[in-house]
Image 1 (spheres, rainbow, N blue to C red):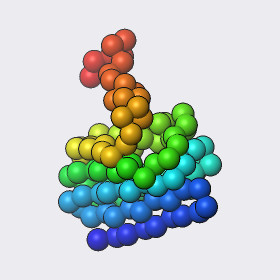
Image 2: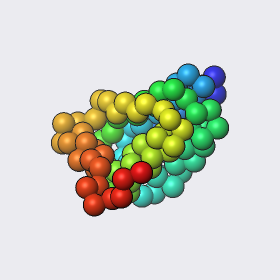
Image 3: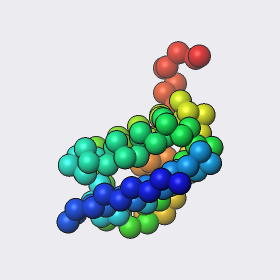
Image 4: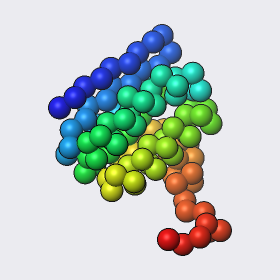
Length: 112
């Protein structure tokens, strides 16, 4: 199992990855600045390991802007390309509602 921990004064993420499961535990403020630092440590192991499950744990997130929502969408996209199941858990009710809405398929997108 591979473990990476990225932390600064506003944001942290711990990523544990193996072929079976990748878990990203996020804490603090998920903003454009923290997305730049955390995207690679989360997305690279998804591509490399192609884990069966990808878990995004957000119970310690205190703030999330549009860039943070974009990162969660990008994690879902990368996981889909790796044929991984994604579970998003622990986020506040309001943020979870935004995450769920962002995951809805685009009805105007062409069918594959």
